[in-house]
Length: 175
Length: 199
Image (tube, rainbow over all chains, first blue to last red; front, side):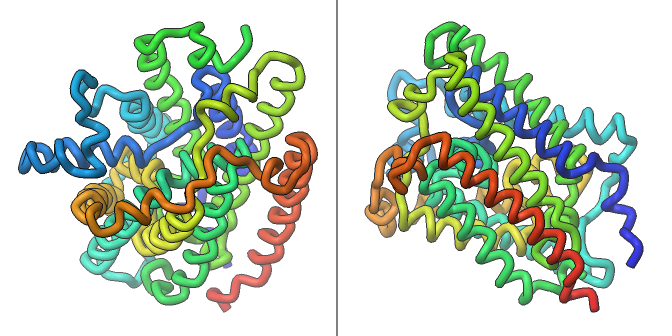
């Protein structure tokens, strides 16, 4: 089978991994913590909900951590700034490789509307998952994994074991 | 200068926020060059088509892990500060349940949070929808706190590493993880030969 176009033009995965590892190492050297992503989405979720129901959010058992008295606005946060950087870093990568294209990533015969519906459902499941796990692939699997944290390895193994099994049931989405 | 610079108070909060953007730019650029702005490249691992995700993740993990162990050995990095103050805490059962939900979200949704941000920069409409789903999911989680708040904070094992758990040294554990990663690379190569979905 010939490799499809969407797999072409990227770095060798081992070299990309070493580059990513060096970025992670630099982050630990500077900050003492690793990279992250889902924490920034959680703060965004709090701010979005705060528009609709400020009182409820400020007293919510989870979101109240972002609205302590005297604290900064929830989006003035290390990880939020880092994720803004991720967007611009991704944009630089896409533009310099001339890869920007409005499109939907899916299997060739799968419908766009079904794919978008599953992206939404997957987002909900993943979002809830990041809160129970207190992190995602960046914060837990990669950063916690590199510092050999027990819970991060439990998380990483469970993520991949579940996804390999569940993949069978959504195989048409990606075929 | 001995790292971590921020915990050693070499740099201020303001400087750290400024550096966060630069670190993020590097992170996002490398994720894009790894091919992670496209959900198809992220999910093909689960069909044994292209084990790129495993190769990138494990080589990144091992690079950073060995780098930290070596910098600590050379006296350029104080690992004990991590163990005392900044390492992620382990909550066994919540993290296992979170892993199941996240694994489902990954293969069904096609992204994880960081790669979805790169997907948005790449013009991928499915990544925007995934991130909106995540925001909704996190709001659902917050709404349900009265129901599952006790579970969320249960089985707290504190800041615990694999070498502490298995009663070995940091260096030995790093060697074991490195060997396991090399084993995983061989398995990945075999899995691509197998490719059970594409026969």
